[in-house]
Image 1 (cartoon, helix red, strand yellow):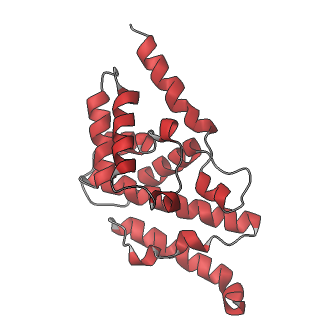
Image 2 (cartoon, helix red, strand yellow; image 1 turned 60 degrees about the horizontal axis):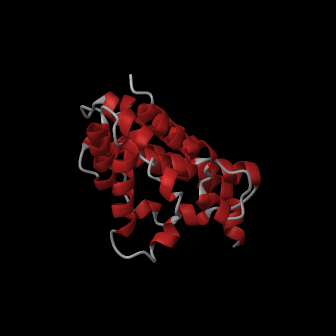
Image 3 (cartoon, helix red, strand yellow; image 1 turned 180 degrees about the vertical axis):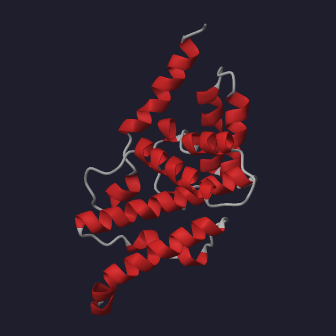
Length: 193
């Protein structure tokens, strides 16, 4: 067995454990989740969503996509969404695609992994769309956790969410329940604004 290729992949990919999610840090939060922690959350949300959907989904594919969905950040880092507005169109996406090809290079299932990741990025398969929903839900669940445990308001993460429906009814239902719970918790604060 060639050990160099899998070890290089793992050493590169596992740097995500030490890469903080910059969106939280930009809002003044300290000791924020890492990209790897977000990946775990997204994977757990995806696994849960599969239990509540009637769509025929390939479980292995969903879990693989969820585990790999932020892999390009091991080189590109976690670029916050507001910053990407200043990039030329498709620049970030092209860079991420090239990074995926590079990081996965030499792995036996590199083409399959890259294709699955692309389905997430372009929302071209039910599995990719489910992971997209899981990615958004994990972010909102984390925002809720930070608001509840740190006494902050993270309105920016909630703005316009209602205008962007989720692909799967189960994800939409979870989002709506989370939003109702948040609104009830913030109601006294909202009336003071």
